[in-house]
Length: 209
Image (tube, rainbow, N blue to C red):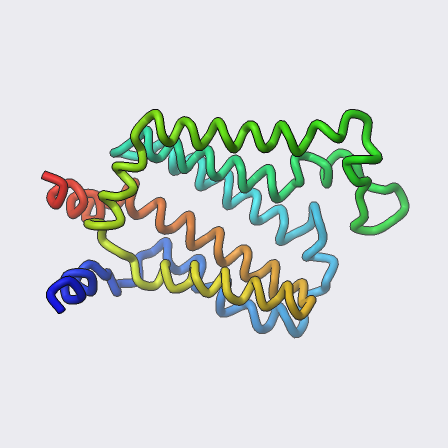
């Protein structure tokens, strides 16, 4: 019971300014499902490009973190992994099928394309190795045990995962891409609060003393 009270006491139910961004996307998700032109959900179009901008902003937030810099560099590397995933390691940027909308050559049809997935895998392994060698896992554990938890941003993040999975299952591209954007914005907001919000940083540092 005491552990549960301690856990619940860590929740921050306030709406931080940065929380308004994922909230806005969540509110717009249903109208987008009804009326958004499906072309805006294609590769290299509005929502996909917006997701890349969000990931780029999150990378900058990580690099400018006020504390636990090596840990946030690990998160920076995670953002690169997600960025590369969004553009399929460049395949959806550099290898469209001419005259066919939202279609791209597969790696097996591209010279040396068979190297893309192994190189991507090696990069991810390198990121994991950095996480271990810098002992960033200790920082992550400290956050899991002590950090202030932004209730709304965590809620939006999990909603993004759940609704995005549903959108994929029912082949509703608008729902899938809007909620993927919701996930990225919530992810960015959570990182921003822990890396730059004085109250969030102070709670973690005080509990860690």
